Length: 120
Image (cartoon, rainbow, N blue to C red; front, side, top):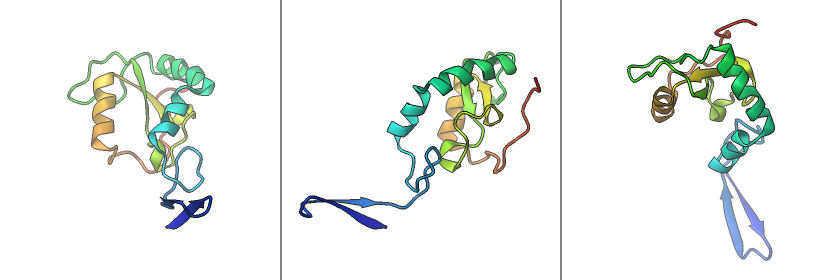
């Protein structure tokens, strides 16, 4: 841990040296960084491609599944180093399954990149 100072040491901020999955700069990804991803033109381009690739069907299929996918889920979470715009790290998901995976913390997420659900 190190201390970042500003001005004449009137303001001190403690910076934790945790790894960021988005920028890989050494800081933990915060909510602001995640929002930047979802407003990025690359995300807006890859999201419909993933939904079409998976046929609009939820790939998670938990007990709460609605079958029709309306969201896209990161298989390897961003804060664990997953690629934000790589279609191989994305899968179609219904909102209940995607929310349940996020609430559970994706502890069962694979450590390596999985094979895609469909090959184009």
